[in-house]
Image (cartoon, rainbow, N blue to C red; front, side, top):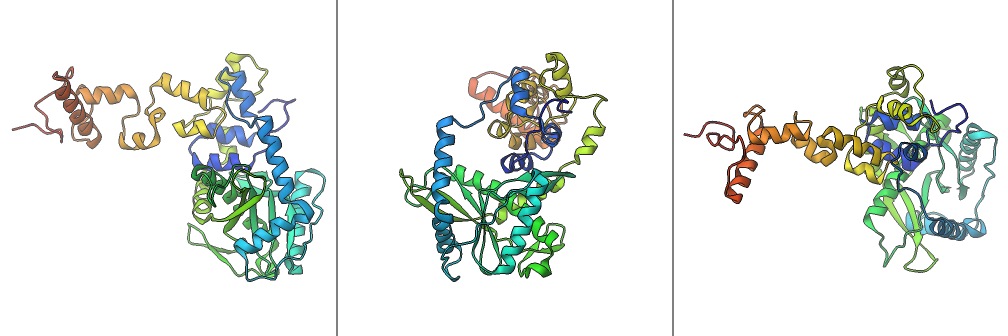
Amino acid sequence: MRGPAVPPQPLDARALAALAANPGCKRRAILDGAGVNKATLASALGSPSAFGQSQFAFMRGNAFEARVKADGGAELLRLVHERLDPGAVPPQGAAVPDLTAVGPEGRAARTALALREATEAGAWTLLDHPLLALDVAGSPAFLEPDAVVVHPDGSWTVVEIKSFPMLDGSADAAKVGAAARQAAVYVLALEQVANRLGADRLGADRVVAEPQGRAQISNVRHRILLVCPKDFSNLPAASAVDVRKQRSVTRRQLDRLTRIEDIADSLPDGTCFAPDLPAADLTAAVESVPATYAPECLATCELAFHCRARSRADGAVTSLGRSLRAELGGLTTVDDVLAAARGTTGDPTDPAVAALRRAAELRAEALGSRSPGHDRSLDHKGTPCP
């Protein structure tokens, strides 16, 4: 579907967190599942995205991560011990297993083996850029956290290293929230690894309650370590972040995703998203998959500008925000909303219609005029006035 000569775009944790935040968008689900590079696709459609780090920010982030992990991760382990496990034996160095292998499946298997060996060893272990597999709508996604630390008690901690500063012990709330959602995806992937390895062999003693009422045993800690530069220096500072809420929400949303095979079966035969296709054919292929656009997509999806233009052209109320869409009930277009406010269409007993008509009446009174077609014989509940 992405084209015969187009390499797949890996599905990372940031993309999964964004997908989980909008599980009703079949367009994003099929494009991510097929490994389509959405940034390239957006450019080919004439609506390029504004995503991506500057080269300077990328180099600064890599330099900071290298500093945090220097000397076998001594400083990183010190922060984990200080913030998350002060009762454990202080780390006097740690094992850093080699995780290289052929292909993503090989690397994921090597990571699982290293986690099992480190857990059985009962000593501090640092896994640098492990690869984890997570099943998403029936398709495997391979994820690469910055680091995973195995504690002496056999528990596992996800480490997120970010380049935004931590000023006076706190960082930007929006950025911390995004990091927490991303880390929650890694926590889910680690839980799948733990379950595949076997709870008995791991000696796990933590029970994770699932939304459906079932339970699984996992030794994955739900407090992750967020490491950022301290103030305006390049020195690391860390904070423990509880991601239980983000994990639960992400798990629930990922469970709601339509299976990618089901979406693909509903598309016309020969649907292809190769960026070298003629613009008309590429647009038709993209529009053949339903999208669920909301303003929040601008911060998470490379196709947001294209979908926004289409949503506005169709007059969809979702372009005004999910909360407003929920308030309007069965009114799905801006034209429907305006017509209901003017009293030309809509059931007057519908709370949304009644609220719109009342708002139109108040606006008309404030402007000293009457709205076109507005029926003053109806009160704010849509019933005839005495």
